[in-house]
Each structure stands twice: as C-alpha cells, then as structure tokens.
Length: 178
Ligand SMILES: [Zn+2]
Ligand SMILES: [Zn+2]
Image (tube, rainbow, N blue to C red; front, side, top):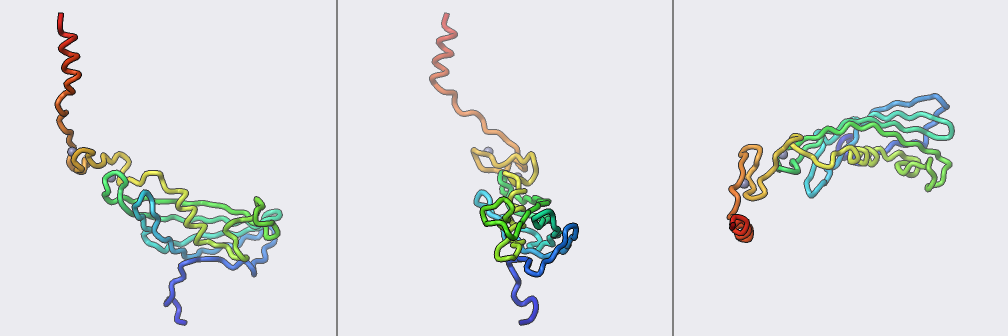
C-alpha cells in the first residue's frame, strides 16, 4: 500500500518492544490528527489539524512514565458574537503506567490499551481539558444585542426604555400627593 494513501487517524505507540532501564529516557515526536471539538453546539477545528506531539517515555520505580507536550490552535465561532475566535491550547500532561497493575489500579493508565499507548485519544482529552469555558473573539467581546441581535462590537447602542410601568406612575402620583 503506498504511503500516505490512508491517513492514520488514530495515533498509538506500540509499547511491546519498549525495554527501558531505570533512568533511561526515550523521546519521540509523533503526528496526531485532532478531530474538531464541539462546544456549546459550535465546532472548533484544530488548524492545522495534524500537530506534532512530543512524547517522552521514562522508567520510574515500578511504573512507566509518559510525558506529553503539544500546542494546538483551534478556530471557530466566538460564543458571544459568533465572529472569528481562536484559542491556543498549550498542553503538558503526564501518565503513569505499571504493566502489571490491574485495570482499576491507580498505576494503570486508561490510555494504555493492549500494550499500546493511545496517544491520539490522550492528546485530544488533554486539549479538551485546556479549553476555556468560553471561547471568545477577544476577552471583552461585547456580544450581540439581546433586543435586536446586532453585533455590539461594531454597532454599540442601547435601546430606549419602554413606557414606564403604569403601576410605578400611579405610585409616583401617590407619593407626590400632599
Ligand atoms: Zn466575539
Ligand atoms: Zn439592539
């Protein structure tokens, strides 16, 4: 099969041949494809979608240590005004895994499946954790007018107050009476 014909969407690292002595460090950089994230009904795409992920594998007492580092740029709609928004997620994450630990054990990483490190899934989860609750075009985005729907960033305005409530008018009249 010619290389590159079928893009590998899920990046995993085969750990079966990994033989690390304590203190030994294995470093590699792998390309991971980030599928779009859906937040509040909006899609946020990684640009570029394929990002280099730096992976460092080392051996600590009784466990293999995975350190991951990446930077993802996501673009999509501002959650206030629907304009263009970009967010940069810088990720540093660490997982421990003991190959002899049972699945429920603290030293069993959920990202190690059948002796493979599921780097793609881990990278995606780690980016999701770094995303702010609100993705905005800028921190002080004024948003859309709740009355007419116009973009308040380009067209700052207020609407005139409606007719005063007749009950207040009556009360005012009452207070003004001698
Ligand atoms: Zn905005
Ligand atoms: Zn308005």
